[in-house]
Image (cartoon, rainbow, N blue to C red):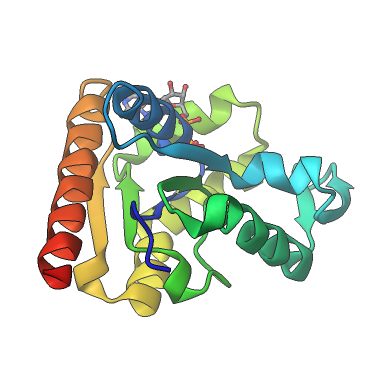
Length: 187
Ligand code: ADP
């Protein structure tokens, strides 16, 4: 069965604004016939026990990738695989290409802005630096483009507060286009 709505992976370095953007996307779409659903992989890791404990030193859960990917697949097939999931995760590694129709990579290349956001979370210097390096080198974008190709990856700037709404509108416009393209294919 083809999906009724596209699945969107919202990715990027920690602190770029994935959760903020996802929440706004869900809220904006909730008053339209194209209601999107939020899937936080962070929450899934914790609620389904897809980890081997919390590493205090690294300030992160040690994710069990196989278990996590099984849970992601189960979750997005929920509702008969109807689609419309906005998946929030800092990586696209291991995600099957067929699960995702669009990858949105949020970027915050101004490292002073990212630094403040990560420090504000209480991350240790080493973890802040590691994430800033990942952002400077565009690790998430490269990973996404390798999997889905440039045509299915969108890079959006997420530095200023007022960029969030515009980014959500772009994604929602893309959802509409995806639906139109599918309808055209079926006629
Ligand atoms: P992520 O989910 O990518 O780790 P969050 O959505 O939790 O990032 O955002 C991290 C912090 O940055 C939050 O305090 C949030 O309010 C702020 N933030 C997110 N996006 C923006 C933006 N475009 N401009 C300014 N601040 C932002």
